[in-house]
Image (tube, rainbow, N blue to C red):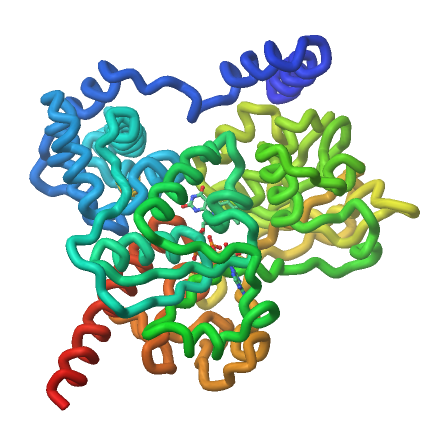
Amino acid sequence: MAANVMLKFVTVKRDMPAKRAAAERTEDFGEIYREFAAGKAREQAGRCSQCGVPYCQTHCPLHNNIPDWLKLTAEGRLREAYELSQATNTFPEICGRICPQDRLCEGNCVIEQAGHGTVTIGSVEKYITDTAWEEGWVQPIRPGVERPESVGIIGAGPGGLAAADMLRRQGIQVTIYDRYDRAGGLLVYGIPSFKLEKDVVMRRNGQLEAGGVAFRLGVNVGEDVSFDAIRASHDAVLIATGVYKTRDLGGPGSGLPGIVKAIDYLTASNRKGFGDSVPAYDSGELNADGKRVVVIGGGDTAMDCVRTAVRQGASKVTCLYRRDRANMPGSQREVANAEEEGVEFAWLTAPKGFTGGASVTGVRVGRMRLGVPDATGRQTPEEIPDADYTEQAELVIKALGFEPEELPTLWGVPGLEVTRWRTVKADFLTKQTSLEGVYAAGDIVRGASLVVWAIRDGREAAESIMTWLDHRSTAVAAE
Ligand SMILES: Cc1cc2nc3c(=O)[nH]c(=O)nc-3n(C[C@H](O)[C@H](O)[C@H](O)COP(=O)(O)OP(=O)(O)OC[C@H]3O[C@@H](n4cnc5c(N)ncnc54)[C@H](O)[C@@H]3O)c2cc1C
Ligand code: SF4
């Protein structure tokens, strides 16, 4: 069955003009392309039973007032629904597209738990906000008063952007520094465009810029400008740099050409989508077209890699994961999507080494079984002796997760305390770090997490920064 789907994809790609093939692909794969028509949104919103125990709301990290905006949508009062939805979420149209709703709001819908299928909350949230953009209800920020204080934000991912939005609304002068050439962080260069269209992110960047947020892109803090210089230029600083250090693989042949990092592979694909020149893609180094691809890992990044490889025309895509399906960290919905698209999953397998000469030709795979539970209660995978086999591959993608970079060393700021996982130590509530006036939010504090948590952190950090600036100006006035 899976192979048939793959064959269908390959046939579409090879035999048809590109435009038509793209249209077919859209039909075959494009859950985000499906028009969520007004009638459908209202119908879905109307399915909410207004149960009075809104587990959906408590399991949404932003505690969005879901039942109320569903009710307003069902009644056709879309502008009010939008106002309510954007009051707690800076980027509802983005969360509506890429939150793992099956683990958050929708997974806790009482209708779902009663076995009748969840209200598709994320799709309604996306629909409400897309309509707001179309109708011109989303406008650039116009603060009531301009304040003299400035805040420097390092990192233009969802955490940094959400904080910028909140601060600017209160009249603060905000400058965002990012080493990439576009703002958005993993929203632009990590998450593939079949899950999140890039113009949706660029539209938000434009709105922030039009509202007075200054972007200094292509600036790598620690290299192009020092952290201390940024701190000296602003009243407060927010660190929202995410986590980018790839967990690596060892074993014989692990350095062979053709074994690449997930972030490099996905960035190349996203850049290509923007129309950038990407020599490593054009040379085939970061392009799956016509290749047998093995992706190693079981999280959402691995799912993005396998699904991108399918779209690039890989002849076969296999995902190796050392535990079984039930223990996979990635969203089950993403796994089901990948399977539907023809990806083969080799559960309970782990790479032991790589074959090849000038470049990789295969992965030496060990078979695993689940052994005794560890301290967390999770069964530890252990190898089955003498059961190895080789999976042929011309491209191997390492998607084993990300860790924080060593910021205090990289930036020469020993006073910036980090945890034993090298994430920045920040107060749980205020997001303040060990340095006065310096706050931190998003993945750099939590470790690799979710967009919706980064948004929440950014919003909370902005609130704390405001409180700190207000206290400081009151204290200065009293002197
Ligand atoms: C492939 C992939 C797919 C994902 N898919 C999903 C998904 O479907 N749904 C979901 O909810 N989450 C997903 N996530 C997780 C989500 O993207 C992150 O949790 C979220 O982006 C974290 O936001 P952030 O603002 O903390 O950091 P980031 O988005 O990583 O942004 C950090 C920014 O800081 C910049 N930066 C870093 N260091 C410096 C420096 N020294 N100087 C200047 N700038 C710097 C970076 O360039 C970047 O732009 C995915 C992650 C990956 C890797
Ligand atoms: S932000 Fe995410 S978790 Fe919250 S309601 Fe929207 S889709 Fe659900």
